[in-house]
Length: 317
Image (tube, rainbow, N blue to C red):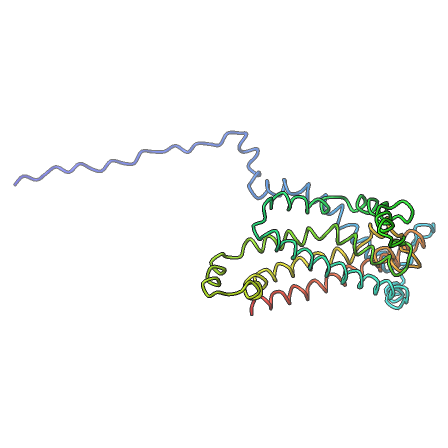
């Protein structure tokens, strides 16, 4: 048997190494990480300029006796400003006023918002149009809302008192009577921000699985049983989130107080935020106002952290 001739394997083709063009060598430093940092840098610089640097400046001023009206450099006084704010009886009164407003406004908004969302979710005709109408107050500026209700609650020319007079109930001093001024603020804030709670509650109600209701109907469960055992437990976590957001907003209320009552009558509607404004721009005590504002931020942050921890423990159960 003749030996077969074996041809030697062909050598792989020689690939010549191509050199990068001069332009590619010039911009070789433009890596993906470098480019991403380049695009983020303007926004980061703007954030540092508008947020971080004023915060650092505020912290520094809170430890000084600086005032914008004195042509004297600020001197370091330690924690004196914080001690003055925490021991001031006026601050304690304003804290109680703010707490009453927060509890009243947020509680009323939560009840009304959930009730309206529950009624709209019952397959009412024109549900989309009703939802849009209810959301209109939330879209308005607080300054516009304040001026709008200030004219409505006016003692002489307000439409609310005109309506009450037509019913024979007499004129009510909504914004100048001590017992009614804070209540009027609660009503105005509830009118504007109830749609926010309604929107969150409506999202939770529409996300409830339908098969749960179908199973309850097979067992001939009543409407109250379905609400108590299915609807409310599933929507409750979302309502708690809405309460947290609204409580934070209500705690730092300023614009409605500034427009409607100016803190009066007799300081009964003066919240903490409005009191900080008076200390800074009427008393010109910039250092004390800085400490005042930082204490408010610390209180809100700690309260939010405890509240979020409570929500997490609630979900784990």
